[in-house]
Length: 324
Image (cartoon, rainbow, N blue to C red):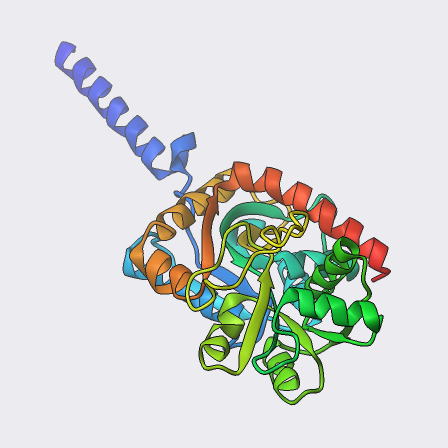
């Protein structure tokens, strides 16, 4: 009897362990993520956001940072709002992430694709500096030249803009200098560059990666940057607006990763940790960030949530003033 009792106890223990391992306890839930992930890119294939997103996926795969397949999905249109609408349509918020920048943030509010309660901030990856650029042989070789010309002819000089964020930059220059530059809308920075070189507009708003090669090639000239410090070569001789006495003109476009509304904190933290590891690799810091003139500015999900809420508020307020 004693031996039988001991045997029964052993069998009971084995059965209990088996139940836990096969779904009988809270630890039975599969570790997140347990299915494939979509990384939505609210832009067309081949553009800056697309190149960045696909590099992020490549770094994750090359370093075995995630056990699941991550599939990039392009959803262009509406300045980012088409991609956000697609994200909103997903039934499970834990298996979709997407890239975002400040222009996309504006689009989500203007087009009302921002969901109730907002998206779920995961991390900031970097900041993209912004510059005012003209033609290399333009009569406006300094910011002072440009300001003197626009003061003499209000609304007579045009600045090419590719999105509402660019329009905000022109708006801020006008307010800071007390002038009236006009802005003209184009579909891309490439179109703006062509328009400047063809003497169709006098100036344009660019990120470093959009104009550095043309500046280095002697076709464009950058007059000033919104950065707190000078950009890297070949833009290192471009003064900041702060150097020029306008320290209110400080801005850099943030690039980050978001989740849908309702994403769990577990998933939010998981992806924040993954991208922190990505941002520590040479493939990101040297081959992408430094090579494209970005400023490394990683923020985890907690820091980014605070930053994003305040930044979104400021952007929406400026767009309201512009009447967009």
